Length: 566
Image (cartoon, rainbow, N blue to C red):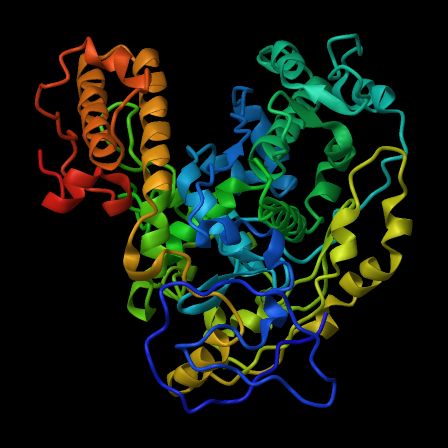
């Protein structure tokens, strides 16, 4: 893959509301392509080689696109204070402290539409942004400097489970037709309660099960929904050895791979650390950001015990939502908010005044946050391009940034047991071992005077906006979207019991019905037949909280009227 190159263009003008994706022409090797002014289509589409099969192409063409679904695993094993020392030694205590945070599927889907496999970055109207090793370290408290998560999977997994967990394997242990995917129900049935009088060996076995559940639920979530891969279990044979792995690079490799796969137009599911993706977005971007309840600077959060201080992501683990279980997070609204991003809405350096509050593991080896060594997770190898987002580190942004080939062939590798991955990825492991020598050393600060030049290049190399010209919605897409929202509300209505939440759901359904009526006549959808028998004319019940989570989380009428009030 060639690097994106461009030269300044004197043209001026406002960017178009939509820029159609184009297939990359083959440029003569002796003549660099010329970047377009902001008002033109991309003239150097080297960053858009995969646009033909990208989700954004469907959005640009005005067709409806379902939000991605995710397999959300709760950490289904109860916590026991006896596990603490082992989880700390394994380097996973920060992830334990944060725990599960509900997924905003509309936000995740809107972000995936902006991800580019060619660069491993999000392409926004303000330029490129990405999740870096700094984000993983600071938000999740995971170690960056260490051995790559790459060991052989050529093992007898029944023996591994019996040896490390101390439980006999039976027909309920593994998912049908799999010898490596452990059923979550089996883990829950066997490791939910560690006996008070358990010896140290038994406590370690229960702690291993907890660590396995932790990484499989929050860091390496797959698409199964009911199982966790046993390939991580040998990493916890020795907790001190586990703590020497670079969990941060492994988590980022897995998330990059899932983001790249999710950009495919026919892809329906999304895995990886959605927790990390969502925390990253809330720290830096305005859309969907909830009201944080925690005061992260409270001295009791770890106090003088630095090791037990939580990572920054802990501050988002308790936030305001609408009453009960009902929220209205709309993918179309998120798209509009991303299209409206400008420099003033982005928090480019969210951590600079909070670093002194973090535990030591978050602050180790900060120079490695800007290494260019590949990220590795067993079968996954992903290129890491921190130079493309130098502004996120407060550093000078090269124009155009260096583009390290993302090696599309690596995405064809799939997980499999019986593979000696250290041998398969020998050259990439050698590169990771030399990570110290691959760090970017340019210490020049970010120069805002260069931003216009950067945007002139970027607007000629990528797609900045996805919505229809003039912000006019596609009628068919909008009606279908509203009906799908109504279906979701009906499903949640049936799940809840408190009357306040049910009343709020009925109000939302009434708004949906009125919106569909305006867009598409006649209404023949039986979704609303369920609703019509339940006194739909009553007034909407407003959220009980005074804090308003933002425009993407409010129904359209409430967005028009302004922030909700008690």
